[in-house]
Image (cartoon, rainbow, N blue to C red; front, side):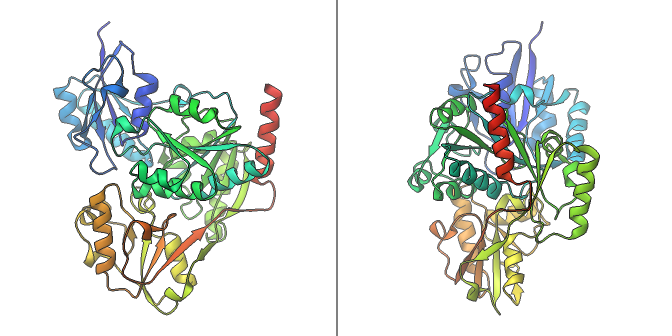
Length: 444
């Protein structure tokens, strides 16, 4: 049979994992290209030969997604594989229509062939949308398992934005490792809170090798999901976080709805700040589509390091970047803190934007009067610093999960927002984890 020419649509992460699981060293397929979306400065690079395998001695080129139709024609593409996350269902089908009109088949990938099996019990924490609260849920899971006497390793969804040949398997055990691996702000936001609690984190590109390394030092592996993507490891307990600030999104976004339908545990977060109608809508959707799932109610109450920076002041709010961009949230923990502690005004950063941040707001015009902590490159970090310092504000609310001041010199008074998960009532995460471990032990 003639080899199928395959193009993988991605955003530097899930696309590489799908290639590794389905196409590497498979002579029936010829992967002619990746396309890149969502992440700046990814196009123009290659998936290197060191990772691509024996069939691709020159590696595989990565192009910007805007060239999709042209690439299908020029490279004689037979099949396009959609491989990134947190987009509306309608968006996926528009891409399918573009691909079909150009003459190629369009495919999304099933979960079973891309979830690696582990020798150790796996807890996967996923979500229906970016910004639902996976990070604090994952930290809470690790905390409970550690209190049970288990050695826990967190494996984070990939964010390979640097030299791919140096990111095959990454292990983070201290803050020094973040500098060693030249982590972006987005990477630090996910790794640093784990490290502060003594949890080792793995990430990278080749998740078969990563899993083997994690298993060697863990009693339990915790999959720390990215965006609303599905797990790369086959979970013994699949927890999906839902956000009542965006009710109904659990049925409208790809592949978040897949997580919703697969979950053993559905955790409704932010109940303390959501409207009752939003919580009720999510409960109704659970009853209709996932009546057998365990449902856990939870809150993520916020605290700030210095309320005086906010009270009676005009403040700039810096929020987690992905939550505001492809997560489409128009507010986050920083806005909640500004209202709770009595800010007189949230200063609009848009008149003060510098460099690459202007492009970010063009791409995501609905961000509004908030500043996403964009830091995919050194240039973006410098532009973020310049924008913060140019803003006419009395103080800055830093609502990212890291201490941004370690990377950015802020010339104004600042206060940090923190938030941890608190379950409400029963069942809780400890109940679910104990049941999972007991079941895993019986099966062994």
